Length: 155
Length: 383
Image 1 (cartoon, rainbow over the protein chains, first blue to last red):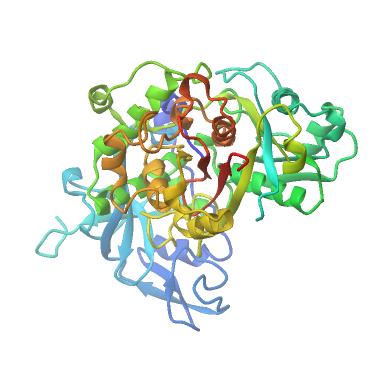
Image 2: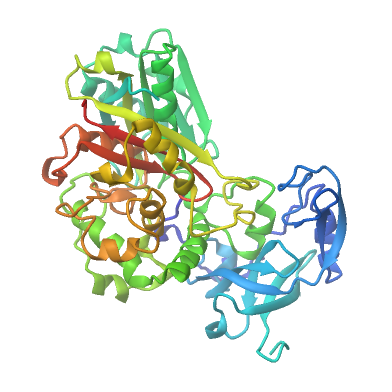
């Protein structure tokens, strides 16, 4: 629906490049998720009616409408469903980061999540196995993903 | 719906980088032009409908006021982006069919380049907190995410995206309104750097300042007006299940290779009493090139996995089996959020396409939107 012309790219001044990305603004539903990330844990909601684990956090189940859920820690391992490689930053805070990869990851636990994928960029392909990789920022922790090699360990 | 409504007129402002004008002024110019183009007296216009993203436009109330319209039976402001144009024409036609209004002007107006730029807007919503902090921060990226998966599953590649951009640029060369008119071939396309892989600049729409409007009237009234009616034979909107927390939240969508077009196609053809093989030309929403491929397949205009090869074969060119995006698309004409896509469809069905007129234009499919939700029309001649 909406789009950016590449001309929209902000100038990549050094000052802009050094400004941090915006911190997440947690809400009532997402606060436990963000708090768990600070401890390098991935805490999601499991619907107590249909049993599905969901993401993002929300007040009811998008599959069955069930209004109750329990918090459950997941391993956040999975495979890349799709990805983009950003060559030109659309916001000044990311201009020092390009090129970078953002992937949608199909978690083994069920839902899909989103995160940057660091490491050997040539090895980022659809269906590549990934594991969680926690990056601490000032005041919040980012969930990234790292490629898992064929032997099952992270490079 | 029973086809008792039609698009009777279209209006545009110039598309520019910096209008230096208010959005209300742009809206008034395009709406006024559309009413005049239809041949209607302003006193006959009793409805205005529009859409905006993050308050980047003006309310219909204001437009009705500055146009000097009389009593309004329908003022409809919708908080949508590019999903909106076919949806609003559908609603306007339904209102006309129901006797709620007689002539409704549908518009989109924005200083989309010099003012609030949708491409870099931060969409407020519960889903935003997971995207913006990690640099997943533009609609281009979301569509690219789907495009990558689509190419993966259908065996497509850069040449397929490029074929869309090249084919549409050929139309733009014939369209004086288009912002991008310089010739483009596949080699130049492939030589260009990525912006957000798999997209290069030519895969992306170009933001502009401007406005575009169409008038929806009853078919009976349309038959007495200046131009042949572009009959609204069918109109549909569809949001798939789990369409997300905001317009950028696609994490709950199961299949990134199919968008709303797959979901509404049966309704659309059923209403029109037509099948996909009856469609003679198409105007497919194209904020980015991949949405053309997904839309062609979603509407059944070609088979699954065939869209890329089909476009490469020339099928969507002016002399092809299904001329598509005859104005150059949003990729080349400019980003009026698909309102100009609907206006182009109406011009073509009316036989007013000029140098870029499709030879067979009795049945045209039109879409609005790229991902989880969107809308579509079948416009036909008065048959």
